[in-house]
Image 1 (cartoon, one colour):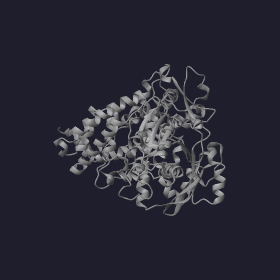
Image 2 (cartoon, helix red, strand yellow; image 1 turned 60 degrees about the horizontal axis):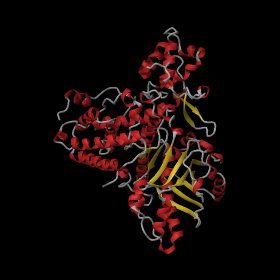
Image 3 (cartoon, rainbow, N blue to C red; image 1 turned 180 degrees about the vertical axis):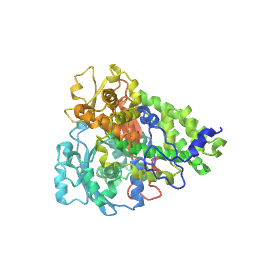
Image 4 (tube, rainbow, N blue to C red; image 1 turned 120 degrees about the vertical axis):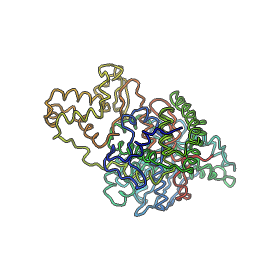
Length: 587
């Protein structure tokens, strides 16, 4: 295949501007045009994102290995019934963080994935430092209660997990009898325990993120998004492995064996996530821009590589083959996900054939591959390819992780000096697509976001079937932006927006989001978030891809099961050689 010369010239050209200000490129990479927000921020594309080098789990393991973190288990006080507590400490440069795990004897009938559950097999907190006996006793009275308990500024996260009903007892029985469990069964589930929440950032009294960033040692460690949560899950995974080995020893005595390292390594931590996570992408536009912008910049840098070496083509080809094998064995109960999985299998096979053809020696080959994929593959295949193309180029990609947090302190303020004409233009830049929607029609406004009284969690209801409008949350930015555009037509162009908002304060949020768009163009989803056909699962998928989640298995359009850290080295194994590409299985 011949490269399109006009596209090749465009990719090769150095541009003086980008969709984000102050991007610094390595000297060996060209600054190229990023994909436009109108393309990237469509909800169905966001719902097709895959983990990549910039995912937070991989950032965490790379950092722990590079800085030579040390790990210890100062306490493991679990009795023969599986009840007690354990402490796992991560010793990082300048400080410590300790997972305190509480194990409980939970009857099967009380085990539930629902957020409204009140008891769990295990409960956890990540403690800032090394806990004293007094700390552990205080937390023993509170952490098992989860939301009903009380935390202090010493605690960084709060979490809980339940055993896999399908695997736990089977694996314990096998190990207790001196046998390893069936590998196929382990791979079919992927985890021994599944978390139902990992809370951080000040929830339920835990340390607030701003507090962590104000202290030099914790600021250095936890600046990256969701660092405390990713560390928590990494340590939970180690505890779960140790707990099942302990349970097997208690059941089998001297006959028992421990779970083989290669089998343990293939297991991650499961997670069940529902609508509570969905509004995050809408409520944090600047942060989401930073995530998407980092990924898009990485993709653009790789597309700008003029000479693609055979080693890079070989690596991507191998990863595609491995992904194909995994995709062929992935299963989902949800028909939409089943359709996406079938499309991905077909796309991966076509990609493998395309990449291995002789044209791989042409200049800017990855750019040609991306162009071909955009014309021939599903969104799922396009975004899988985009993630895989980053793998051979850590020197072009990994530095972008430094800018993925939100450090724009002034982003909460509205610039009241802007004129009506200026704000109108900003609104149209981010929401021009929304002006063609009939906002008076029931399908366009069919959904309504609200907060449940029972658990104070976001929920999605049917506006015209339930009396929810009085409780609606501001999670329909497109509708509100169009309302603001229409309202501003009644004001003189030179009027300051401050004057308008004094008279019509209901448009404050829309104006604020429009002003954010000046430096966060990837912050706005270019889809109607209250449409009758909107798939909230796409919001979950987008966020979880940046966590680094795999084995995406929706159980409906509103909740999903995933796996975290499958394949990752355990603390005693972690080094710079295995700290990164563990997420891709080797076949």
